[in-house]
Length: 313
Image (cartoon, rainbow, N blue to C red; front, side, top):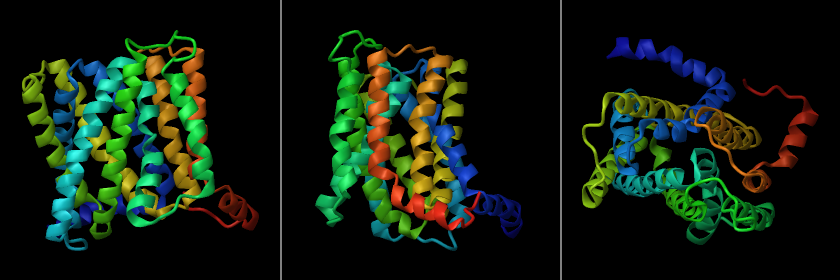
């Protein structure tokens, strides 16, 4: 085992030395999730199951390497399992949103979890959201209305209104996942994500069997895209982000994470291709702008730029 640690130590050193690049790679990896799901041509439950199944070995390996510096309590294991149940809801509903409103717009809607987390932590832990977060809510909701196409009724997607509804449920469950997993991550990064991923795989399999949509033997082209989805988004993407963001200033963190929905819209436009209406693109601008208002600490950015202090790259 010491030999294995010696092999992976340079990777962890690279993450610590260039957290900005690592976080951006993680955001980019996750941004392709919707496109890879569409390419697979599978059901939401099937995609969720195989995404977790194929990503799990990498996460388990990372947890094994981390085991001496971070040990989970029994409570941490149970919370990780519960987080996985919530994450299963997020992925299944999000994949349904992709089916109805497209990969790019569904990813934008998924980022509404920021509002969910803000109010959830306020109600549960007494962490009152900043004033700018409260001001961002009407901006974000206006963006949701535009993405649904409720004004012009000429929106991209087979059923944009239903897609927005699924996207908001996904954001709600993902917000719950983040609030739970945050309580566990204080004892390590990889192990809670690995346990929650295993839990998500089990729940998605049960859900797929219940509704009759689980395909345990997809064709090879579908398997390739699902394998790529599991390795890139579920494993590499989340590990890159989890390890790099604690090493970055809050302002940089917010900006990098805001790149994810923007990249998702651009990749879906060129690779699917999807053609959101002008109204929906305006909605994307409202949602991303509202999230930026809620999360980017402009005062800290001005202070950092004024001092001229170097920031890790």
